[in-house]
Amino acid sequence: MTDQFWSLAGPSRFVNQVIQAAEENGIAAATAPDRTPPGLLEALQDELDNRGFSRVIRVKSGGVGKSVVQRVASAAGIRGAALRSIESLLVAQETSGATFLMDRIEPSEWIEWAVFLRAFKAERQRLHALLMPNLVVVLPVDLPRGDVTRIFGRSEIFWRGRVSWFDMRTFVGQIIGYHASDTLADRIAKATVVELAGYDPGLASFLARQSFDLLIDWEMLIAKLTPSIIPHPTWSNGWCDEFDGRTFHHTLAALARNDEKTVQRRIWRAHVGTIMTFVDEVRDAFCSRYRDVLDTRMPYVFIDVRGDTKKITDPRDLELYPLRNLLEDVCSTKELTFLKTINNARNRVAHFECVKADMITGLSSSWDEMRDLLTTDTWTWPRCGQSLTVMVGPTGAGKSRHVRRHHSFDQIVSSDEIRKEKYGTLDVQGSQDEIFIEAHRRVYAKLSKGESVVFDATNLRSRDRLAVVDLAPVDIKVAYVVVDRPLDEKLAQGEWRLQKADLIASHTELFNKELPAILRGDDRENVVVEDLRTTSDSMRVA
Image (cartoon, rainbow, N blue to C red; front, side, top):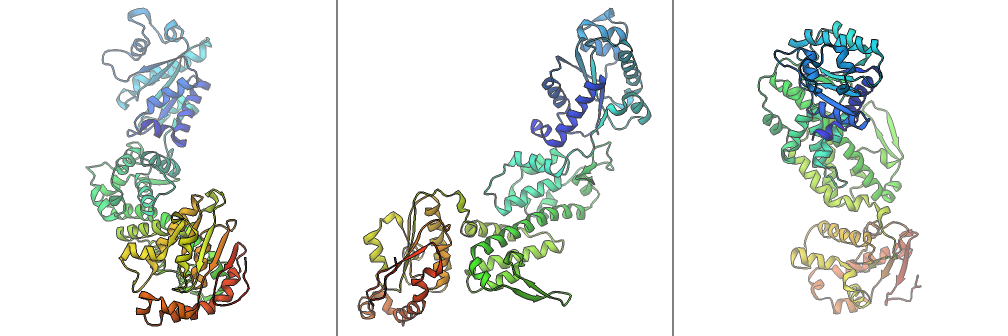
């Protein structure tokens, strides 16, 4: 993962600045803590190669019994007494046009290296020869600042505050992968890795290998992070740095001091950022899906905590609690439960509390089931002449018979067939939400692929019809096919319907009540109506 890390914006800018300083001044230093992310020397060498430096000579620190000049000359391939001074090193054929890339200098060696570096810089300035070698050296933080400043001046580039939140988010995304279909649980898990890792790609890599179930369970996660003995965090030892403009003590260093509160607050930041963004996503989806209903119920007037009267005219400005109340009579039970749960999650993070893992997984799975029906990103659909036919009529009117005669089997989405699939019978007591959620999902899936769909259900209530109509964009044709027949025929052939008291009669009554709106296409511009009733001579609308 080192290549990915050093290609990030902050780290790559650091490397570029070091090499640019070497180009301009012939000598440059990269000052970095002991725990610098691995791969710095390789990143420096790669950038030197990319900029056309003809030869890079790696020089290791240490080397008992040899002077610094001898060690550098040996790395360049110059043997024995062939090189007697820094001047001869600078003008030697073996070093012409080269760049010395020196490994980290330990503080115990600094005095000897400082003498060499001062002489190297002075001789290079004095000679003004063509193709003299450049020098790039990695320095620890814990060196006498006066010495380092006199040698390098502005050519010393500091590794401090180089990794931004965006860098770490990108790095974690490269490891785990980002997808448009990421669930809420996925998003919280990734955000948790970013917030806990801070500037450290090593910790990020470790956390990214953990299961998402662990990453969303903050209590288990903190218990998993059991650090060994860690020194007091400083910049020089790498256990403290700047992260997005503020001091960031490494997460493991915080736990080593039994400071679980700091770690919990970082996990909370992952939760609050993701949950509040998710709340806005959910609000926009519900407002878009039920815009026609909400527009008729605006303005929303309420008394705020200070006793002032407030008025909201745009549904997108509603908090989740009033949004749920306004939609209580049109949303499914599942949708209302979801809105209540996400509001609870929102309230938790608003009060500096992390969200429990079971609440995250519940919200995540519920949203995956209903997201397509609510967000309807129909701009991605092919427009290939597909249409949506919505059957409308009371039970027993003959809708299914008409559908089977006039449409192919693969076009039909039937609520009755889904009942039989799920429950093995048409006589299903209680809420029908699950049936219609599945029906709407199938209608949406077919339309989004460019296929025409016939939705076979009673669709007697305006809200039920429009719930289907709104699955399609306004530029796709929707047809209401209205079917009914005389009441005595429906009673004579009622079959199982006759076992349910007044079912046929109540449906007929509701159908007649809704009929004016049905024949107007519920006042939707993209809806046309085909009236196939045999119970009256009412005007056909096509």
